[in-house]
Amino acid sequence: MEQKPIRIYLLFLCLYAVSYMGNAVYGTFMPVYLKSIGLSQTSIATLLSFGPLIAILAQPLWGSIGDRAESKNRVLQLLALGSAVSILFLPFSNQYLYLLLIICLVTFFQTSIYPLSDAITLEHLARTKWNFGPIRLAGTIGFAMMSVVFGMAAKKNINSIFIVYSLIMLLTLLICTQLPEIKGHQSGKNKVSVLVLLKNRKLMLFTLLNFIVQITLGYYYAFFPIYFNQLGADNSLLGWSMLFASLSELPFLLFGHKIIERFSIPAVLVATAFFAGIRWLFFYFVHNPYLVLPIQMFHGLIFIVLSVTLAIYINQQVPKELKASGQTMNGLLSLGLARIIGSMAGGIASEYIGMREVFLYNAAIAFITFVVFIFIFLRESRAVQKATI
Image (tube, rainbow, N blue to C red):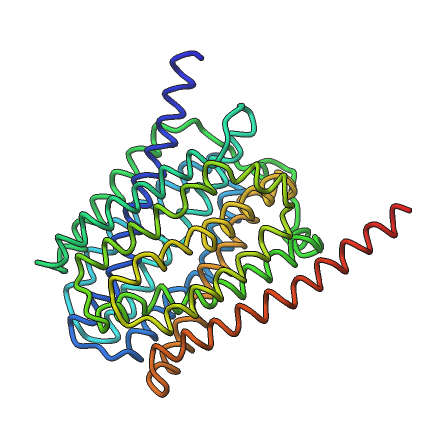
C-alpha cells in the first residue's frame, strides 16, 4: 500500500478518535455539571431534551446542506468550529433560560458531526478495500480514554469541561482540513427528494426499532451519571464505567461485518432490544456501584450495533444524492427525538417513582420491542419468500 492511502487511513482514525473524545466529555459529564450548579432532575431533563429538540430541526438542515454543498468536508469543519466556540459561553451564567439557549446552540452544531462524519467516511471507504469497523473503533478507544482521563480531572474541577471540549473540537476541525474531499452529489442539477427515504420499507422498519431502543438509551445518557453518583460512585468511577462500556464495543467493531453476514441485519438489530432489556433490568436490581461496571459491558451489544449497522445499511441502500440526508435522518431520530422522549419523560417519571423504577419500565419497553419486531421481521421474511416462488 502506498504512503498516501496509509496517511488518509490514519487521518480517518484520528478523526473518530478525537471527535468521540468530545462526545465523552460533553455527553457523559454535562449532566454532572448541571447537577453541580444545583439544578433539579426535572430541570436537567428539560435542558438535555431541548438540545435534541433543536437537533430535530438541525439534522435535516445540515444533511441537506451536506448533500448540496460543493464539499461535505467544509460543512463538517463548520460544525466542529461552531461546537468549539458555542460551548465556551455556557459557564457565563447559571440562569435557566441562558443555559437553555447555549445548550440548544451547542446541540445545533454538535449532533450533526457524527452522522456527517459517517457519510464522508463511508463514501470514501466505498472506493477502497477498508472496513468501517476498525475506523469506528478508533472513536470507541478515544471515548474510553477520555472518559477515564477527564473523569479524574472532573473529580477535582468539573468546570474544565468547557475548555477541554472546545480544544477537542478545534483539533477535530484541524483534522477535517486534511481529509480527502467528498462532494455533495446534489451540488449540480441532479436533485433527489428526501421523500425517497420514506419509501424504503426496510429502512423505515430498521429506523423504528432503532428509535424505540434509543428512547431507553436517552434516559440512560441523561440520568445514568446522576444515578451512578447516588449509588455512591464519584466522577472518577463514572469515567471507569464509561471505559467498560466503550471497551465492550470492540468485538462488534472488529467482527461486525461477519456477524451481519452470518445472522442478517434484522436479526442483529432485534437482538439489541433484548440485550437492552437485560441491561436495564440489571440496573434496577443493582445497589453496589462496582457491580455496575460489568453490567456496562452490555453497551457493546446495543448502541454500537444499532449505529454501525444502520450507518452501513444507509450507505449501501440509499441513493448517493441522499447519503448525508440518510445519515442525518437516522441521527435526527436516534440523537434527537428519541433522546427528547427518553430524557424528558424519564426525568419527569423519575421525580415521581424514582430513577431505579424507570430503568425497570425501560426494560419492559425493550422486551416488548424485541417480541413485536421478531413477529414483524418473520412476517416480512415470509412475504419475500412467497414473492420469489
